[in-house]
Image (tube, rainbow, N blue to C red; front, top):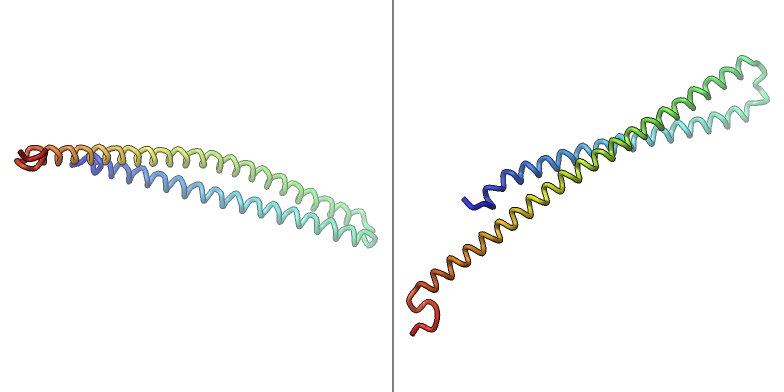
Length: 145
């Protein structure tokens, strides 16, 4: 069996590994985008809440009510900070997974190059065999005299 054919199962394994790494990367990127969207929603909600408080400021007369507003704002700000930390973790995971995918992709490309080189060598050997057959035939090569 030709070397290029023998290498095909190895290539398939490399391709499968590369695809798995790509799927993991896509999943992590989606998680990162979701985390960013959630933080944006929290920030929007906080801005909206601040705006509502400013509009109702003249109606707030009790200290207890102000305390509730401040406590809620603090919880929102904490949630936004935690979401920011989650985003940083997701970004690190995406970066790490990107590196793994790039490495898997490089291994696949290396295997493709190895197979191409083997095919090229096989073609060259086949060409040499055919040339030798032509040269060995009577009247097949040269000038025939």
